[in-house]
Amino acid sequence: MVMFTAPKGVPEYFPPRSAAFLAVREALSAPAQHAGYEYVELAVFEDTGLFVRGVGESTDVVSKEMYTFTDRGDRSLSLRPEGTAGVMRMVVEQRLDKGALPIKLWYAGPFFRAERPQHGRYRQLQQVGIEAIGIDDPALDAEVVALADEAYRMLGLTQFTLNLTSLGCGACRPEYRERLTAFLDSLELDEATRERAALNPLRVLDDKRDEVQSKLIDAPLMVNHLCADCSDHYDLTREYLRAQGVLWTEAPRLVRGLDYYTKTTFEFNHPLLGAQSGIGGGGRYDGLMASIGGDSLSGIGFGLGTDRTLLACEAEGIDVVQGPRIDVFLVPIGSAARLVAVRTLAQLRAQGVRCDMSFGERAMKGAMKAADRSGAPVVLIIGEDEIEAGVVTVKNMEDGTQSTVPLTDVVTFVSSKAQIIPSERQHRS
Ligand code: HAM
Image 1: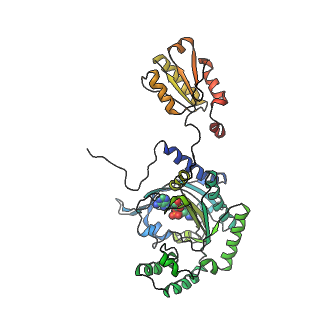
Image 2: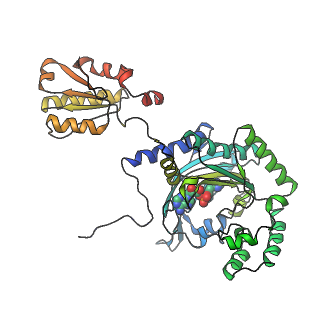
Image 3: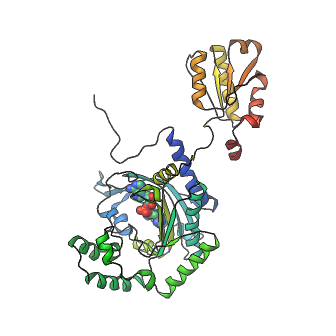
């Protein structure tokens, strides 16, 4: 017998943890939805060229980690390693940029990177992302950062940190890059590091090795060489962040794994996640649209790692799923009772009560076990005696008390008894 397993590096979410995954995904997008961001469902694979041009040929993500294949029409396609390039392609293709600006969009789903799998580093990774396109306003930078900060806080996370910097623009970065290259040329570096420096000298600043970092102490930093426009933009962004009570750390050596970033750039980290501590990141990407053949519109956004945010919640001991998954569980005993249960279930569901019943020809003991496992705080027992008397036994699973309610009143009784419906459901309804 062949036994199939999920491909390496693909985390799957199944009960009970899948409920927590959904809750995290919902929480990560909620602040953006409240702020008027509209949903987009993106292509899961794209023309390989989009990522090569948009994300950057020199990045590990594009050069080493893409799942690229040739389709039956001999086209080179790649599973999306990230979402921003695809959003920009959609905006240009669908002419969304011809409407009101900024265009504010959000998305969620899987992305694919052929990385070496480890705890928190997956080949199929999940993100919730937003992009605000078409207006170059520091207030928008601050909004995007604040929405991520709010999402993490709403989940109850307290230990995450925000690292913030500005990566300059097409006017000031080339000059800074030359300065950094000259500095790196003056150092003794190994061959591989030299090659990285030739591709993108900024990436060397991110080297994790102490012996390299010790040589970089006096390296010139982008934030000290911003042009007046970038400098003003960064000052205002920080002023607006302060106005919203967002706390951050200046991170002048922050380097992101994607090439499109300009000006405001940020990363959220969680100290309890070990090597894969980045729970989300993003920034401005003012040249991206033009690089894929669109107009020269600016943009800023983030990608929050759903898998890692869930791990962070677990590490902080936060129970993101509150309350039971259903409110009421029905236990019919015998075929006449089953018909009543099926009807009652439909009526309760129509009233918005979350409910389930015991399926199969189970005796009382087995059915009550299923009721217990369901976690429902209220169980409706419908046995032969109840059918005869035209009643239902209502059992409060929290204190074990029982009462009988006429069958004709049970839907009204259950849906109106606020005290037996979990408080969490009342919030949502
Ligand atoms: P990114 O930093 O490459 O940015 O990814 C965003 C987040 O996705 C990371 O902070 C991390 O939490 C999660 N992530 C990335 N790779 C993995 C992995 N292999 N396993 C688990 N989680 C992972 C972007 O993708 C940009 N598109 C974000 C953005 C949007 N920038 C502007 N707009």
